[in-house]
Amino acid sequence: MRLTVYLAGEIHTAWREEIKEKAAEAHLPIDFVGPMEDHERSDNIGEEILGVQPSPIYKDAAASNFNNLRTEILMKKADLVIALFGSQYKQWNTAMDASAAVAYGKPLILIRQEAHHHALKELSRKAHATVETVDQAIQALRYIFD
Image 1 (spheres, rainbow, N blue to C red):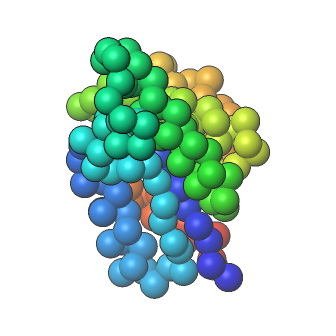
Image 2: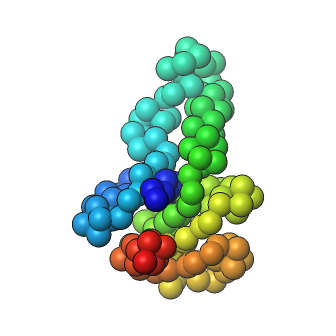
């Protein structure tokens, strides 16, 4: 059996690569998908497809439409979602993606530091599992295949 895992969360650090490498080292049969990780392309996709927009607000709206399209399709095809709440960046997109996973009925693993316990308590209760590290998320993935 192979699983498809959607990796939700900020696109500024290499946490996705860490998960992918550790899953490969553990020989887990997993395909990973996620948001567009090229930040510039993500911000400009609306204009790439539709042409120059009349203002930054319209540019953001156009990009959001295509980014939401990508996220919804890939997340709905995924078997599981892992959402990482890091400490360095604002986490609005992560919260939105984790909430969407819950709404779609997708199994959800949250990765969040203990310091974020209170802020994420309701979302954590909706997740199937909440862990504090990437290594713990890998252990949860391994357990699926044991």
